[in-house]
Length: 156
Figure (tube, rainbow, N blue to C red):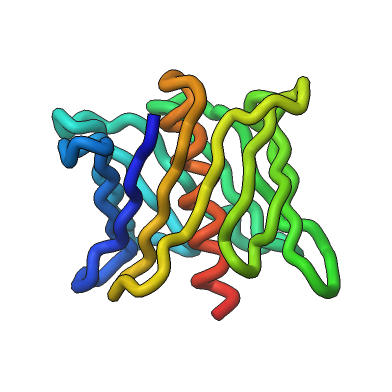
């Protein structure tokens, strides 16, 4: 299953629209006023589905992931000098790839592909394709992409 992730061009806070391949809305993401990034995720019917919240006052960026109101895990940036690396405490996942070019893979605990993320170039706003192997992992994969995108925006 593919999700098309598009950042909105004109918005006060981080806002994104996520579509299925056929163009129907899968999720809408709205940034909230808070210390650090706080991104609320709504499903196609407008119900709150999850949240990505940045922990403030940490040495390195750390984002907590929530499915509904339940804590699902976190993603943290690791201390590296040349190539960004992240550790995930969610679903037993790990991330591999080239974060500078925004092409990376999310692997499950057995090393199998859970999702592949690629950034499309030549767009006015950030646009990604998230190719998810299991539809039940789509929301968690989206939250990982949101956290990495938010960390990059903070860095720049």
